[in-house]
Image (tube, rainbow, N blue to C red; front, side, top):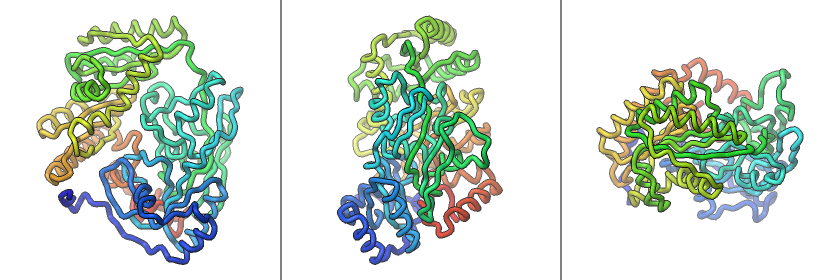
Amino acid sequence: MNAPIPQHLIPEIHQRETPAALIDALKTRFAERCSTALVVREQHGRDESSFAAPPPAAVIFAESTADVADAVKLASQYKVPVIPFGVGSSLEGHLLAVQGGISIDVSRMNRVLSVNAEDLTVTVQPGVTRKQLNEEIKSTGLFFPIDPGADATLGGMSATRASGTNAVRYGTMRENVLALEVVLASGEVIRTGTRAKKSSAGYDLTRLMVGSEGTLGVITEVTVKLYPLPEAISAAICSFPSIEAAVRTTIEVIQVGVPIARVELIDVNTVRMVNAHSKLGLREEPMLLMEFHGTPSSVKEQAELVQELASGHGGQAFEWASTPEERTRLWTARHNAYFAAIQSRPGCRAISTDTCVPISRLADCLLASVAEVDASGIPYFLVGHVGDGNFHFGYLIDPDKPEERETAEDLNHKLVARALSLEGTCTGEHGIGLGKMDFLLSETGDGAVEVMRTIKRALDPKNIMNPGKIFTL
């Protein structure tokens, strides 16, 4: 059995009663699509975070907006919490039923509703995953670029304001969601935004819902931007004598205006882990993994300029992935870095960080943080979407040793404090959930958090929409 988690690291659990009458009503409405089986509830009561809580009282498998609305109306009638569920890939405890309630699984709402290739938009149900979407639209010559690594649903990606490896060129979900359909806490269905590229019509409710983490409503449709597939794509890796050299190169690349599509930092620990996991032969040094999009001539120019900048910082072994298969192999290895790290220490859990700072402060933040974790003795891996100032440590802890968790949490607190002092953020893409609640007040100030609470109370007066996340009421 795992050793006890230190008290201050346990999420606040205040279970609210789920009346038998509600369960009966849900079973009447949804029949076999309402499950109270323990194994199903447990599956829907955990994500990829290191937090734990009792599972929800029931799971509803929604297949339409009407299903979601009816489930929410019944939950509202009994003042029971509602927690949206996509594929369970979130990292900050978003899915945990810390106040009990029901989980609404939208994974069966997985239809691409309309592709408007001429307008570069697509509308999907929330259970459509990013890989599914790109597979279904590949014949149009368009693609959806937001790539958080996991094959997440677009509903979940919208709710957490996800981004990932392509954000340096294509932005985040904030820039790419045009419109939403949302079921509010009352069961009312509203639409926000349109397929038009811009609007000055009233409050920007789309931006309010993007990043709300299920605390204001359940997303049931998403309209996003699409982009033409680049005429040419080229990927390259470059090894460096130090992390600082790799970071300084990245800063120069961004500051001189190279329109690089992806630039990922992988530290030497991660390279070793990825080599072992994916059977690669990468040089075991800090590395940048880059990708260039454009015309053949523009891609060549970008790559040559980046290679020149990298050489100025000791970059060497500049290697090209010239075929789609080679590019896929490299990026698959990058996306599997988390799993490679977990396998490097059997039985461990990873505590992940998610700070983001202005690009000019990246070296200051990253190098000081590396020095701290090296001194701690905690095994770790480091990857970063460094083109936009975002990076992640994964502290690999033994769950049977509370002192390791304490050390990792202390490192995370110091890292966040450093990022905030450099005008950065505690979370660049994972969201607040449970894991970053302590940091939100430090980042935004009491006034901003109170405005958030006011909005939450107005839209969700019974506090049933994923309660206990982002902030407490």
